[in-house]
Length: 129
Image 1 (cartoon, rainbow, N blue to C red):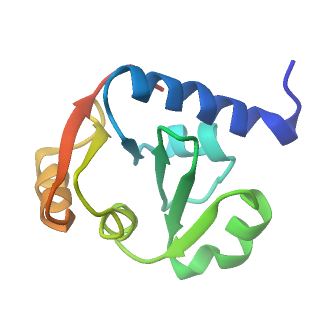
Image 2: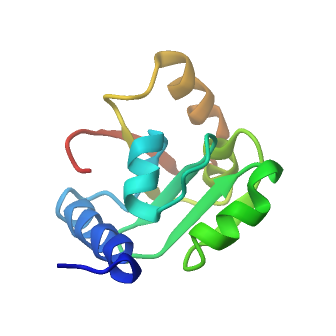
């Protein structure tokens, strides 16, 4: 059984392998239960960008500076709001970014689409996490 120190990286590796199999470069995780499952972060505002090479970035707002440093020391954090937009704006194309289609409203999708840079394509992903 995985220890607390390895369970989150192990989970991220499993999801990253699934992304590669689906020809998706990254997944934008916005469902907070999934953010916690993959990172250990328990705050109420966050987004995680997980890449198929296992690297990741997490975003939250300034209220959680101390908490995220303690709970997620192994992932680079970007402070900003809205969190999902903050991590998307750092991606350059060409890049296929999966989004959690079962948890995203149409309005959120449209906002994310506007945050994407040139050559960044949002693609629906289901059942990966």
